[in-house]
Image (tube, rainbow, N blue to C red; front, side):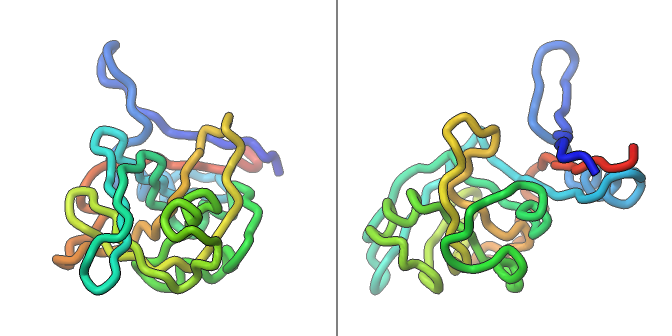
Length: 178
């Protein structure tokens, strides 16, 4: 099997390109396209930079904007190779509202890489509470996937709304036997 990756992008006439398409398209690719070894959703929000925060006793301790955020499925970690410092790719998304962060994000948020089980909030459209279940080394600076936060795409916001209903997504595919 090849280690090639395919990323689906959208074109809007001849004036604009976007990394991805609507969620139903991602599901159609996964269900209807043959010859792909693995398919995953990579949901980003480049138009609206999320705010990342942690709090103690209801008081924000750290709060900053972070644009290197993605919401992914567990297959993302089968397609892209990360060096795991804590947690495992097999178990990090056993529960919704789980997240994997990088070493640099851990140090920026908590001042340490001892972060498993710690809580954080990502404010996009609605605040979403996450439990950190994995820690990985940062990707090289020339990566097309420079994310410092990878949250479970099946997470729910504080009002119970699903992330999948908010916007669109990219799909990563690992082609084999095409």
